[in-house]
Amino acid sequence: MEAHCPLCDAGLPISQSAGSVLQYCGTCANAVTQPAPAVSMLQHDDLRQTCRGQSLSLRPLWQRQARLRMDWIHLYQAEGPILEVGCGTGEFLAVALADGCEVYGLETSESGLRHARQLNVELVQGGMAQAMERYADFQFDSVVLWDSLGYFPDPLGVLRGCRQLLGCRGRLFLEVPRSEEHTSELQSQFRISYAV
Image (cartoon, rainbow, N blue to C red):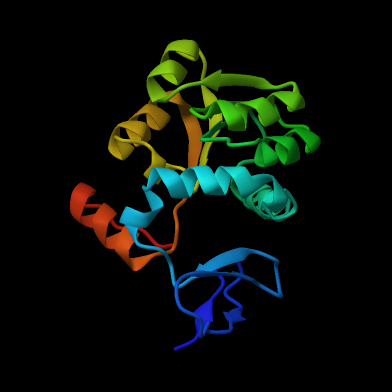
């Protein structure tokens, strides 16, 4: 069975080494962990801290992913303010800002916000409750979550909050990790179905 890139669907070589290996797609330069780590491993605090410590070395990759994601948004939502929930270090916000968009970010991590603040955009530190309070009288045309939904303790509450922050013609852009374990866990917990 051949592994595939979740962004462009190009074939990836199967790793013969023990444990998970980070592979780069030769077509779009997306980084893919093969095999996908278990949900319990992704929620381990030591792994998250290690990833954050090495994360800045992956910024060029994140910038390329951000460009692809912004192109996707342009297909469905021509203009209007964008809120990124879980903005991390701000690569997507930077691309959207360069495209002339009005952008806002929400992030729980102080280390991510420290880098994102260099963009001079409005950022809110905290979760969905802080965003709902800050933007109670504001409507976004796009709310985006790029691989961040699984980090919130109440994913369904986050999705409900996103819906309240969207204007009447607003769109939610959501990307989740491509993992059978994540997919089955979300489907069983929230009785939802989606394609990744």
